[in-house]
Image (cartoon, rainbow, N blue to C red):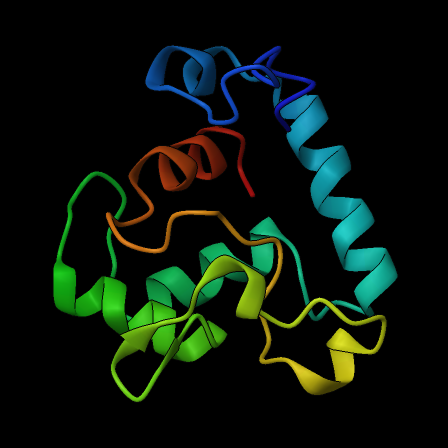
Length: 123
């Protein structure tokens, strides 16, 4: 995503870049995640879980965001996992919760930018 958004140097996607991000690129990235994980991972999977856990696009609710983190395995016993501690093995689809990947480096703060991008692109 960083390469497609031309934000590799920065290492993160800002609001302006998210608004300009190609829906075609996002759908392609999502399809790849879905294909390699047998439907276990991908942005569209995460968006469904995001909504199921009470999150709404454009609104930040810390409790709902924490429920999302719990559901996808980014939080354990009420604590956010560090990025390197997430499940990255080749058997991740069988050992990690649905929606565990792709993951962001930062756990807190909600899914505002990504959520609005996914919604805008119809995922």
